[in-house]
Image 1 (cartoon, rainbow, N blue to C red):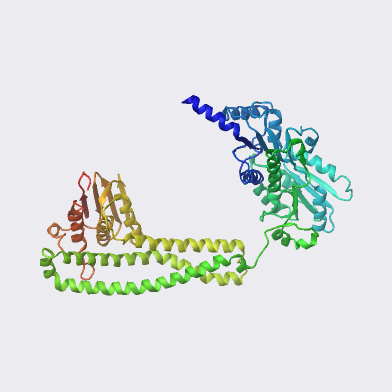
Image 2 (image 1 turned 45 degrees about the horizontal axis):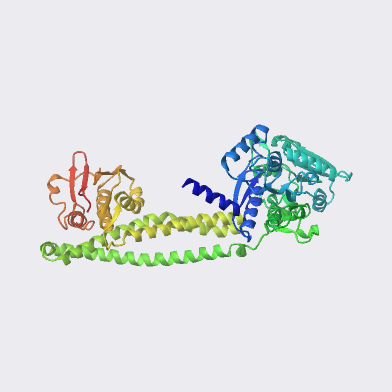
Length: 619
């Protein structure tokens, strides 16, 4: 069998192409993610069949490449991809290319053609074998960014070029110095250091007639710990308040900075160009005829929002077809969908509250009628219970209505606070608008905050609606989950009365009517809640097909325990109880669920204990 599987594996690999995407940096680095995802998407959308794509991230921004680390990485790849040789290797950025060049003769990479993007070392265009390598170099355009700088600051005298102290940064500084050497009338100040504090200290008294060009700033440290480029930009923008330019597209979009844009190397375009070169090769074009690209990986980006901070506009720069980022729109155009949805939800909520209020009044009227009817027909219903099952159904309906009255009160408790919050937020909206506080961030927070309130209210209604669904068939259900649902819908009232309720023990399953079981638990919790005066506590314990519910509500006098399950018998004040709840609970547990319910009481300790026991075998 093993030989057959090995044979099939060899046959499949003869007709498939194994592709490795080797990224110099980590996946969370936007530049790397864009290149990597673009390569994968372009390959998958091609008509080339049987492409097996593997991806690795070397993370060399944080873990600097050393001979020992490179050897460890190689051994890791050899072990991971044992028995496999790559046909194509995609490279993103210099460190991965250096790694492949060093170990190209390893059996894992030996037959592979290499396609690269984001390579800063342009001198490699004269050294790489065009029968093995093809791709696009990352060629910056310092002079193009200098033209943009002169448009941004009319009397430009100084340009600060800021970078970390990585190998890539030092190479870029050499390149920039060469490209900008002929501009003698401008003072170019190069600030490269791994410690961000040293950079910030150098900028405390910056020249007001200046711009900043950001080179490489992914490798900065603060207090000897690596910090993200977004934090670097925030720190720089607080100290240096003039316009900043970047040569990398992923930084141009950042709002929390002073970056106005720049002529940028474009990660997406580089990924597309590199993968299209690979597709040409896979379609039969010789690699030496595919070659290198240095001209098509750049585009001019403008951050319109940040331009406005400095009183600038795109028209000031006379650039054809730039990429515009963070373009403002009108308030309603930008949030049209969210505003319409919010208004619609508010209308629905108001209508629902009106309907709910009407139904609540009807329920209260029905409850009063039922209480009056129970008072006059107590003896007749007692006799009829033994003769006519229809009377039992009436009692069940009465119990349900009484519980629904409790539930309406629970809804009111659950909704009171969110409705107050919505009202306050809506009342403050006009004042916030007049005070000019409404911006993109304010609105996003406003919508998110109020949507959370509305979703909470909507979930409350769904929970109560699901609770009152009538089971038509028996089913297996979790006792603990059923009890938790009852506790959830009573949570607001219990919390309002400072009653602490807990559930402990091991869950077990029952095969019966779940809604009837929840009705029993609700009746018992309501009785406990009504009996408790202060420092309330209800404990629910699950053990061996038994549910035990304890409370400290004062206990039941011994002389009343024998009557506690009689219909219409109640210890509550006139008009506050129907006397149906515990009677119906006994009918449900003992007649419908083949179980047993009993109540134990200790008036001296002011405690009551309800014990519900189910048979050990399946019901």
